[in-house]
Image (cartoon, rainbow, N blue to C red; front, side, top):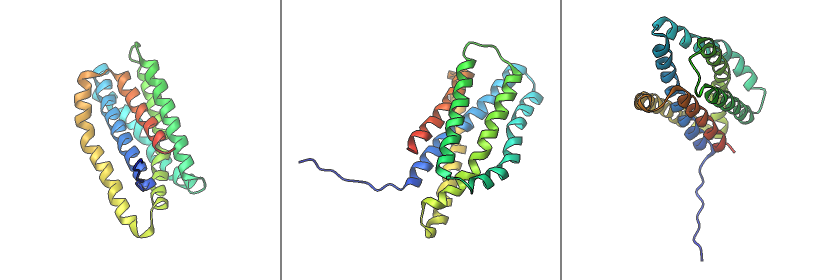
Length: 187
């Protein structure tokens, strides 16, 4: 006779695991992006403008995303956004293989990925309270922050080590894979 048991893992746990892995991937990618641009151009100004181009859409679009996120299924919305991030990132990563540096392309991709990222965070934050009981909201917010802070601590170490081993297209592909992992966790 087979022994079996069922563990009741709340859906929010899978969301946190996926978000933690994706956050590490995105932070490692951002460090690699700064390193790559600096290495290719030798210009701190160019590196700074690339990072700025990556921040502006997040600032502008996050408000709009919150409004849209209130009117649609949050889970479906996040799946679509992660699918877009996976597709965009993986396509660019594959296209980078064996090619030379193109600053205009870096700006365009950075801006495009930032636009897609900008609509993710507000909806993600609004989904968590829907997945837990009201009396656990404070606990869930704490866990969510712990996941983000852990990713913030781990990412620079992972990036520093990985810079020795990977080229930039591999960093981009690694980031894309983290979005695919999140999609798998939400099925």
